[in-house]
Length: 367
Ligand code: UD1
Image (cartoon, rainbow, N blue to C red; front, side, top):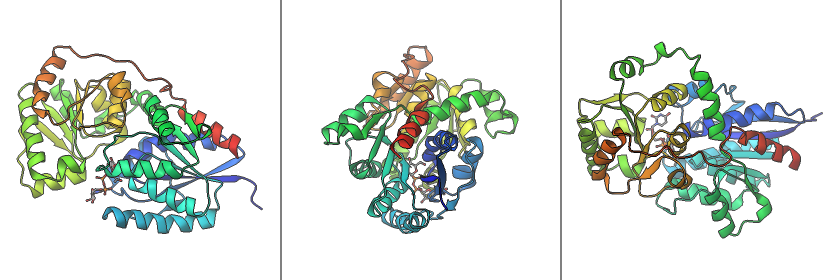
């Protein structure tokens, strides 16, 4: 006979793993519930997935759906079909989805069609740019989720404006920051000698970090060339370390773009290695969502190579600056940062390492 209620946690792509790690830990502490982890397989390379499980101490998933890469519709449909089977078998009391990737919306849809309550962690974020696939994923996921767990005040405002009932919105803080705090503690004991970036950071001492993977920046030759020409300019002042996302690396090769000599291109890094790299950087240039939050917490200046952000608290309170299409401004901004003319910012409310605890408490109470 089954006594414990089950909570399924779904993760699929790299930015999901740091959002789910502490939730799973907290859930395992609760005697009345059992956690079941499902990995959709949206990201599957050792460097994009397995290494994050190791660094974040995430146990092996009970289910690996193995969906892999594909068009948006293919990926979403494959996750829905496979996840529906898992739900039928496990009969969970709640499904928890995190972030805004295709696996998030797909698992949410499949569960809701089986009348299973869904909790969305990182609800309410809006870039107001529906050309971003993630924005569509966020809107759809929030519109049918039963528990909306929010990381920053803008999320609460957005959800209220969209007409969500107040008792479904929970401002709880940021589970990615829970993992970041744990990760920063672990960095003390980490064996950094084994890291691919170690000789580089040792020899460079001063460096900036670049990450790029948004389709709008890397899928079009002219835009990618323009960004790399700007980085070439930045490297006149300081070397730039660039752990390249597979999508970006493929396009650099396909478009035959030459990287400048002081732009050091690496394979994707593990979680702890990347944290260490960013913590030691003079600045980070990125088009990622999560890195805007991580740099705010670590008080590292962040220049975001996008026209909008769904994380406005990082602009208002943190170290983030939105570059928009004025990318020619970046070398000048880097010059200012190197003259120590950047603000340290403050850490947003409830980014205190306890978000996962708050979420699990609310879910267990609801069961
Ligand atoms: C996805 C998310 C994006 C998130 C990003 C983080 C969606 C719509 N996009 O974008 O929100 O910021 O993950 O990385 O869900 N590939 C590999 N190995 C892997 C995974 C992917 O080589 O392990 C390559 C494949 O060629 C694939 C391409 O990267 O076609 C893109 O992967 P995909 O998951 O479709 O989108 P991302 O750009 O990673």
